Image 1 (cartoon, rainbow, N blue to C red):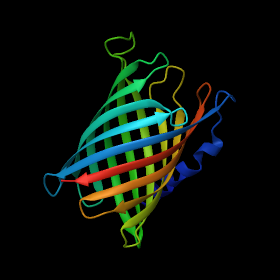
Image 2 (tube, rainbow, N blue to C red):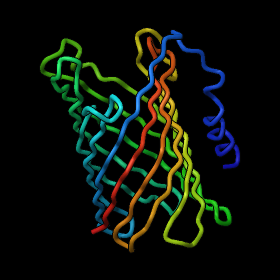
Image 3 (cartoon, helix red, strand yellow):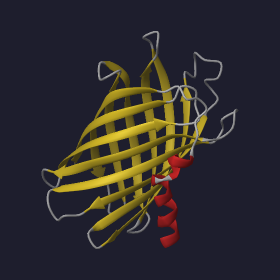
Length: 226
């Protein structure tokens, strides 16, 4: 397991060795808001549903909004698997919405050393865009996403954390590459055992694409357990 942790720590440094296809870049300020409801069905199974709205163009326009539903199964105390479906409406240049269907599966390992907890997550996702209105709508876009999260347990209502996530496209006709990285710092606040608030700041960077974009994201999420 030590080797696995060292492997995922490389995510924090890897972009320093990535060179993009173009030097032209653009920046944007965004706001991501979400509401998540979770229900525990048994000691090992839980379900969740969330709604999220993302604003772009310096927080002045809708970028996308989506609904996400999933089920999580605890294999053992540290190991979890989950399956999810997401339906997304993403705004296009012509002010119409692109309809997208995403299916994704996660394998997570969670553990704690003293007051530092870590979560290593591997995700495989498949997404279809404009199935009925596009010639390529029935061709899925596959991604592998690896994420490392570190949390500091202060035995208080608030928990600070940092994370890094790497996106690797699996079926790019021009060649598979890492094309996106996310770096996040945030804090979770627990009102009580059923409700919590997550506030974070994230830098999202594109790589190996034409005209890569860097997004500076403020995020606010509210979670509730039934």
